Length: 248
Image (cartoon, rainbow, N blue to C red):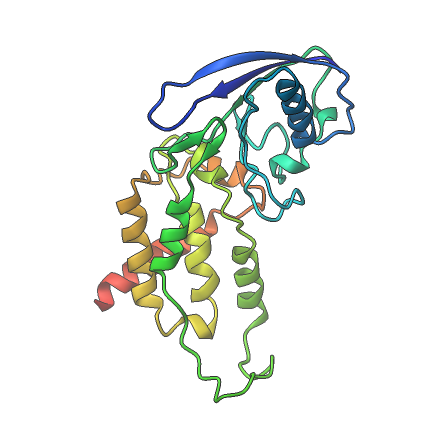
C-alpha cells in the first residue's frame, strides 16, 4: 500500500504547530497503525530527520496511551479499539490519512502527537482511597456479599482505561464519561460507600478545576470509547453528585 500522511508536528506546547506531508509505501495491510508509524519513523531517521513523537506502551489495547486523532476520529475508523488495535486493512491503497493529537485545553501538547493527560491522574487522586478493615489478614473473596448486577456494573465501569477518547470526541472537551466510570466503579460496591460522598464531590470539583467542559449529552464520548462505557454512568454520576450535595 502507498499512503499519503498528513501529520501534526509541534515542538512543544509553546510552539506553533503545523501539518507536515509524508508519503510512505510498501505498507502491509496486516500491519497495525503503530507499526506503520514505526516504519515511517525509521525512514525519517535514515534521512536524519526528527521522528514523529507518539505515545505507546502495551500495544494490546490495555493501557490507552496510543491516543491519536485519525481522520477526525479518536483511535481511527473502527469501533471498540485503541489505535494499536487499528490495522492498515481499514484503509485503501492511495488513501490520505490525517493524524493529529487529542485536542483539549486540559490535554496540553507535549510534542507532536503526545499530549499531557495527567489531569486524569489528578482527578483519580482527588477521589482518595477506600476504607476497609483487613484485620491484619487477607480477606476471603466471599466475605462481603455483592449483588451480581452491581458487581457486573462495577466491572463494566472499571474497564475504562483513561485514554481520553471521550474528551477528544466531545465538542465541549468534557471528561464526564471518564469521571462517571471512576465514581461508579466504587459507588456500586460496599467497600466504596464509606467515602462515596467526599469522593464524588472531590472528583467533580477537580474535573472542573482542570478545565474540562460541561456535558451536553451528545453521546459522542460513548460512541468513540474503545471500551464502550455506557452513558448510563453519567446519569449515575449526576445522581451521586446531587445526593452528596444534599448530605453536605
